[in-house]
Image (cartoon, rainbow, N blue to C red; front, side, top):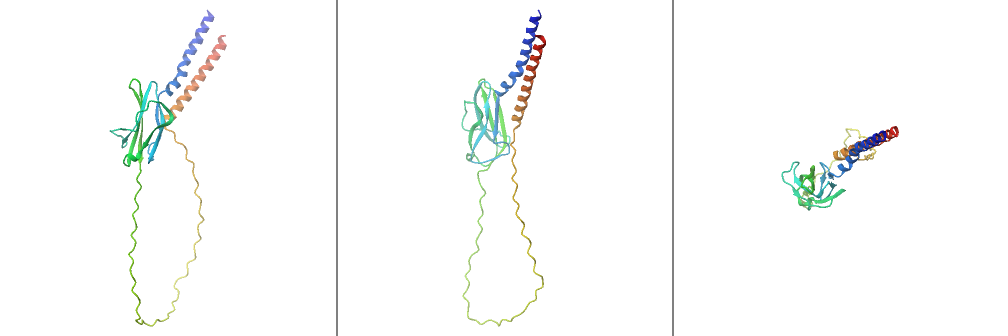
Length: 220
């Protein structure tokens, strides 16, 4: 009877640890995120859109653009893609085909049953045109008339006393080299959330395994 109770206790401990161990893989299977470009970024030319597009029951994903921070119309970039992408290039966006201005991006990761995961990036500025330089008008050349032989007045030599002391030259400042700062990488809110979930799941799994070991040692 005691041996049966021990086996039942071990089975209960294993079953209680399974949801914790399976939580993280299931979460990793449902991701749709654009990591570059980020919000308020300025882009021009052909821009690679980076990120992750994967989901349980994956069918395809697509990336679209829209005018403004909250678009009412969306336009497909490229086509739909039937292969999942993890931390790679989702699509290439040729921004020369759209006018300069404020845009938003949208990622749809579609499942086989028609449901989908959506991710948006707002405030992207497309700036392909450079400001035109205004040419400086050149002064018109004037012809100087040839001097005539007309005698002029007799010049009188006058000595003028200096009224102010000569200014002393100011010392030349020594140029200081600018100190280059190191830009810290920015992580999106989705990546921080995934990291916290992964840490919590790992700690819970470790505690569950340690608890099972101590329980088995007490029973056996």
